[in-house]
Length: 231
Image (cartoon, rainbow, N blue to C red):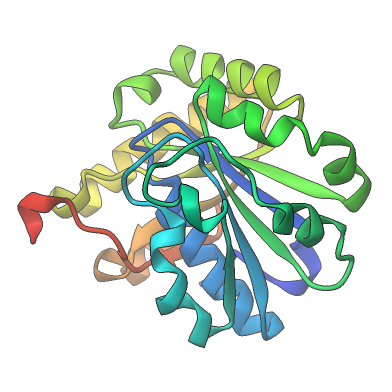
């Protein structure tokens, strides 16, 4: 299997953004864990200041022993979810040693939260990935994906460098669902002139056939969040 991450293709700052329900937080966490295995330790910054569900910051204690330090808004804002940004985030971005992964909300308010760091991010070197799940309403067509890119770039004032294909229906995902959804993401990439950085696939669905026929690297996913009806 072609690795989705290697020391040669990792920018100083990796930004994962996407509409609500695309699975961007799961992708950011799995990417951060994979990067920590290669680099020893990295920082995962929770910039999703709007979404109150499936938050990176809720994984702080579980990720730390695996080499991922979570930086999030101040403790007082964790449960009331105000759009407050910790000064530690500034420090993380200014630190030129190591890698930073950022989980950024894809709606207008969430995306704007990162805009204040534009100059520092551009100076450090970054890649902004749009996580696309074609089985969610905002990503259901090529046109909607194209519009999402335009909206997020306008709000973040940063450029999207690649798409991340994450076709899934959570527990109901099958290999056929992955393959069919991925084809739509490929079409969107062609329309936008953007590469697909990698395809995300739950570990239980990985097969030699999928790996053999997928044109892009694959990032195996372990699910860290589960909706209430699966508990």
